[in-house]
Amino acid sequence: MSEEKESFLESKVLPIAGKIASQRHLVSLRDGIMLAMPLIIIGSVFLIIANFPIAAYQNFMTGVFGKNWATVAQYPVNATFSIMGLVAAFGIAYYLAQSYKVDPLSAGVISIAAFLLAIPLDKLGDVPLALLGSQGLFMAIIFGLGSTEIYRFFVQKNITIKMPPSVPPAVSKSFSALIPGAVIVLIVWLLRILVEQTSVGSLPNVITSVIGKPLSMVGGTYGGSLIAEFAIVFLWSFGIHGANIVGGIMAPVWYGAMDANRIAFQAHHALPNIITQQIFDNFINLGGSGTTIALAFMVAFLAKSKQMRALGKLVVGPAIFNINEPILFGLPIVMNPLMIVPFVLTPIIALTTTYFSMKFGWVALTAGIAVPWTTPPIISGYLATGGHISGAIIQAVNIFISFFIYYPFFRAVDKQKLIEEKEYETEHGTDETESVSL
Image (cartoon, rainbow, N blue to C red; front, side, top):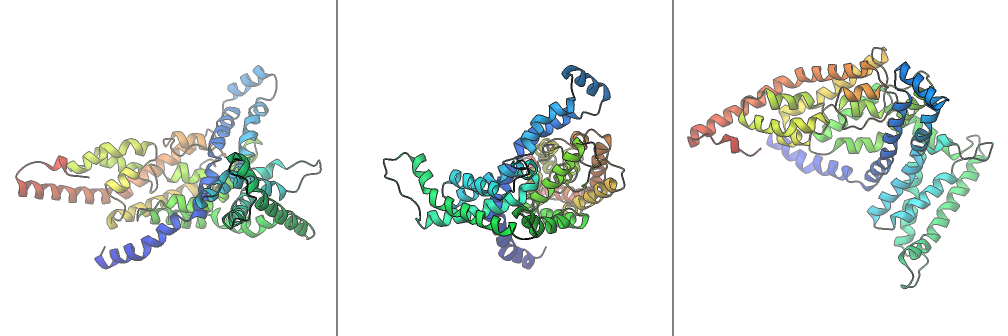
């Protein structure tokens, strides 16, 4: 890469990308949705337990409980997956308020009130459980961000009820939230009344039509996923956490698709979506962003240079658990024109092989089970597809393909390191390359 290009990237591209990465609304959106992740993983464990694909196991458990075992195991699944949107509404507001340095708990509680107020009740007068879950994620984003912006405006302009200093902080904060909370509830209430007079029917329908459907049409397709994955690795190429930026935008689409598959999986229906969060977590990011697990093993076991072998001791362990910052910055891949080529190309090919293998029915679709992204490959593929060996096989295929893509570039870097080491030894007359800083 020429000095002019490097200067342009450093002065123009990196500052813009850095600002996007730290943009408070995107960060709040990402962190707020991630607040629900522990619950989703817990629910996924029970989903696996309820649907473990062995007939003898299912028969035994049904006999033990004397009733439908899947129904019994579904209790904690509903208690976790079905409040995804509600938790996100609180979390998004909490983290956004925290970034503004106003009371995050009050902001989170007000956001929940706005979120629930926007949901129409069913014929029995109850809140539909589906809209509290993944179907409510887009509402959670709108009301989490919107209500907090109104709340912080009132607080920062001191349009609040002031209490004497002697009043306990918890009571004082509650009264400070009274005026902005009342305004937010009033606005949502009036919006709901207005929308209910139209043919659209409800605020959730408006949000789904305006935001949800267009974004799902992009993020849920092969082409849209290619763009998203390219953006992730392109940003990582300059040292910016691309998954955090892109994931913050696409998470509602991918988690919503995941939950739709989960519901179909529980009902033993055909799974509707190929592109879900698990496609990226468990089938593309093998070893971390850029599908670098094969590269990590090459560095550890095939390198000839002492620098590379020393680096291999540091990168192979984390790579098994899909953590690749050591190799991104140690090899490095970041800002390295030679390694950026396979780093961008490999995950795009992994996405392509996975997508079309699932589309043609060769590999089982992901079953809505949120396997943690740190789960080692092969195991995660089996679990994510609901106990299908094809999920593990396609992971192995992707790792095999990634090996041949990375190998010539790895050899070029290793050869260059060897040349550097020989030059160093010739110049200094000693073999001190083991201590060369990585």
